Image (cartoon, helix red, strand yellow):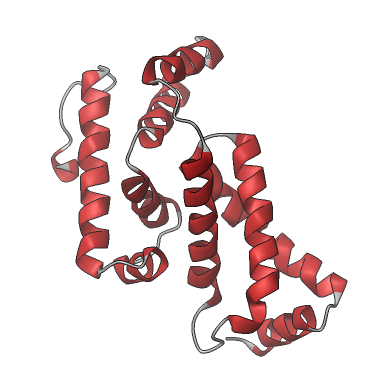
Length: 186
């Protein structure tokens, strides 16, 4: 941990509002991105992001300064997302597809439409797969970091990422977004 970051954390622990604002501003975008990818709804992601930082600030004194800060932060964020998903009533898949179709602008380039299809497919993954996939592909985390955040063995983290890829490809093939299976995905 750098001396600058150590001083920032110490200032946060001492209640320095400027330091707290700096810490939140430094990581808010990354945490929101992770939460949005997992939850799929802006308001839910904003709520989970806010809850994450409240938890971080309440428990900052428990963070082990000998370990990296980001995996600890993302573990809290992913746990907040799991809680939100557990509370959310599951909507029927057809309703999700209708909502996605009604918000898609047909004048958008194919790349944008593909991105929306992938986002929809990611939302349909099991929670564990979605978390592992998002941490690996969106945050560039290693399997070791993912296993620490999700509290599972490294092999399980690898399996979840692999299964997420396979399920995504299957969904995209079924929806005729892909016409052939990418060899690296299976």
